[in-house]
Image 1 (cartoon, rainbow, N blue to C red):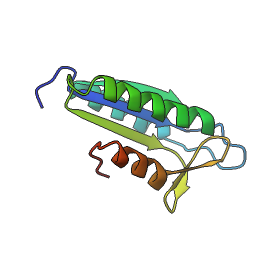
Image 2 (image 1 turned 120 degrees about the vertical axis):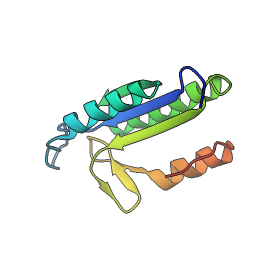
Image 3 (image 1 turned 30 degrees about the horizontal axis):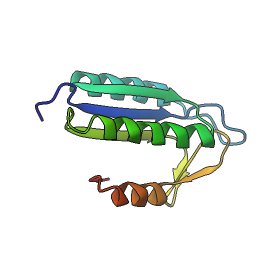
Length: 116
């Protein structure tokens, strides 16, 4: 991986704006350390915090567009979502579930290599 930037990283950190779910203590520290790590590795990092469902979907779609536009100038893309979740879903702060499998299928159809 020799490109500059080496890649792009979208980091979504849903911490404490949930309706009924508890606050995620320590998540801001985790997000800060992840941002620092990926910056040190040469990634452009986009950090978003406490997103509702529509904003999460929008952030992911906009990130995918950024990756598509920069596919010839970077080597890698990373999406990290820190939030409540389980069984293939991740919750936005309005407690609507984002279906991870559905989004992975969509990206695979676009012939983007995904591991995770």
